[in-house]
Amino acid sequence: MNLEDQVCSIDNANSLFALIGKKDCLYYHSFNYKSFSDEQIVDHAITMIPCGEHIPAYTSDELLDLLPAFIYYNLFKPHDYYYLRIDKRTYKDIRYCAKYVCSSIEGKEINNPFFEVPSPAKSHASTLADCLAEMLIYLLENKMMDIP
Image (cartoon, rainbow, N blue to C red; front, top):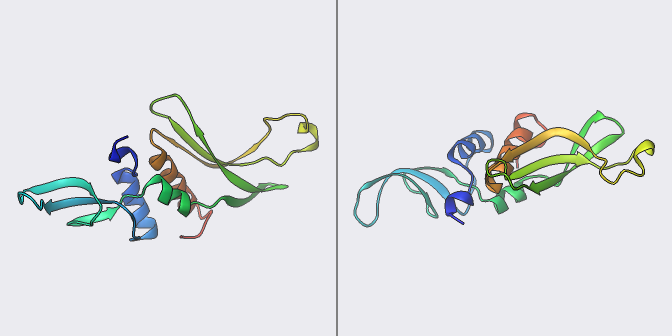
């Protein structure tokens, strides 16, 4: 797996930077810096050391740590607490899906093993890091969680 597939995209990194500011992380999207070896200007690279202009390039592990395991969403009472569920699909462009669901069973659905109440918090992307980043962005923009 390429490093680019293990960190969130530049667009998602910019959105997260705008929402939560600078955080220490394992990798950075670094822009417009001089290469250490031949002193050429590098337009963009994923680096472990912040170089030039930079923003955090969160990994899927770091994003999972930032996402809450549960959210409180009271639009569909009595279904208040929703837990994070991540699915891996076979489609290339929608490989990963993340959503918050409530599995509290209503009386009429007691025999339905697939019953769940979805919340509007959901995302999908071709990489796990982008899927989780988009979920975190959604939760922060819609005030469904506090800034981590």
